[in-house]
Length: 102
View 1 (spheres, rainbow, N blue to C red):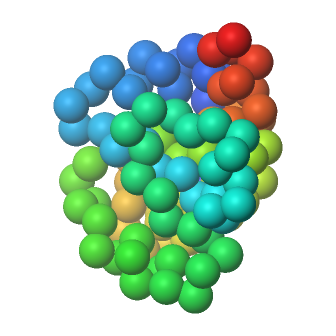
View 2 (view 1 turned 90 degrees about the vertical axis):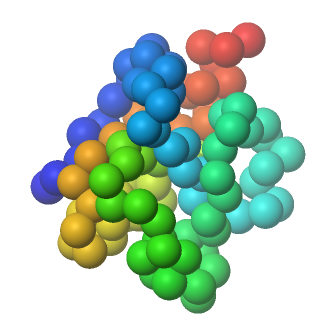
């Protein structure tokens, strides 16, 4: 497995790097639960997900999240299988983020 599950605090630390992209893989309906500032949204449930991910810069670091961490782990697995090697999955997803950020 070539991605790491990380807690919110580590996620926030990595966000400060200019070579980092925050990737939200939730559905549009879930965005009402809040978003990580500056996140790029690519819905993992959308048929175009693999195509959109292939267009991303493989040299960047990706911080990936969903609602609770399951689909973002799936997204990280897909991305690592297509050549991405700097992948971090937010443990607990936006739910954990919201708890820490309250």
